[in-house]
Length: 246
Ligand code: PXP
Image (cartoon, rainbow, N blue to C red; front, side, top):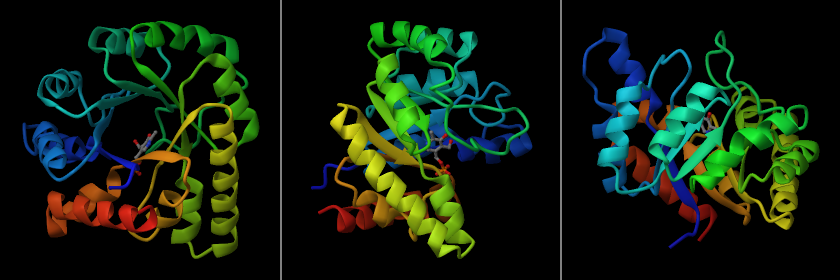
């Protein structure tokens, strides 16, 4: 068995539900199915505007899950209170802009170092593993280490976008940056995760990095589930990850 964990992000089950404003499809049902299909964790992002996951979804996920919940959140006082109430296994601090369609870049840790150090301290004290979502940039990694984060999650979006656009020089440069920075972060004692925009076509080179312990994947898997069902979509991702990291 590979030691690389797969966290399945179920945000976009809620996106489809919210398109009609009712109760279906239920993200908790998707999370339970993902668990049965071999997900090692479930990831959910409670955005400030609640455009997909809502507060009641987090309550229900905390009750229903047997695998760990990775709670993605912006560094706001409201989200800190919610996280401290639930004490999920992990919190991943992400940048958030209201007008963006998805999390566009990594967090500027270096610029906000003091504020972030104070922000994450109570979360760590409550027993949450604190992860910081950043670009593969040495300055950000150093800052994440200094503020006391236990985990960094490398933003794979630029690599995946370059692949989709057929810009293979940029894709390979992004991949190389992530390879070097995952190794560097590991030497600082940080646990390394990665995610954003990963697909069957892009997952293997990232999964092959020996320091990467977890991939968080959502949008592509939920889309693929429309055609082949969620267990099969997850099973194929798991198979590719295992191939890259036996
Ligand atoms: N990791 C983080 C920190 C994210 O913000 C997201 C998107 O919510 C993901 C992983 C998953 O990205 P995607 O849905 O594109 O697979």
